Image 1 (spheres, rainbow, N blue to C red):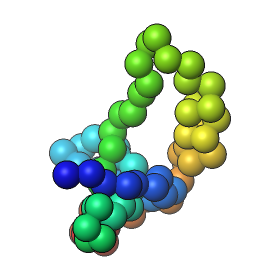
Image 2 (image 1 turned 90 degrees about the vertical axis):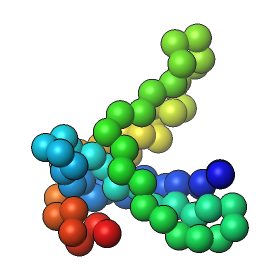
Image 3 (image 1 turned 60 degrees about the vertical axis):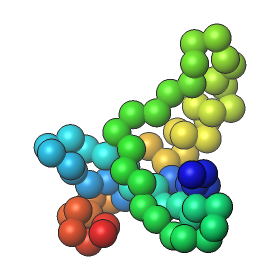
Length: 70
């Protein structure tokens, strides 16, 4: 399965851990939600552009209850 995802500014908690809500679509067009606690680039890769784009969506963000995300 392949999913194209986009970060949102929404933060929620799963098992007491803060996670960012990402929204996505499968390659067949099915909408989905993805909850990401950590994301990184491999050490040997240049992460400059990745980090710059990620910083645009860093907390504080807006907190939403998990029940509202689903």
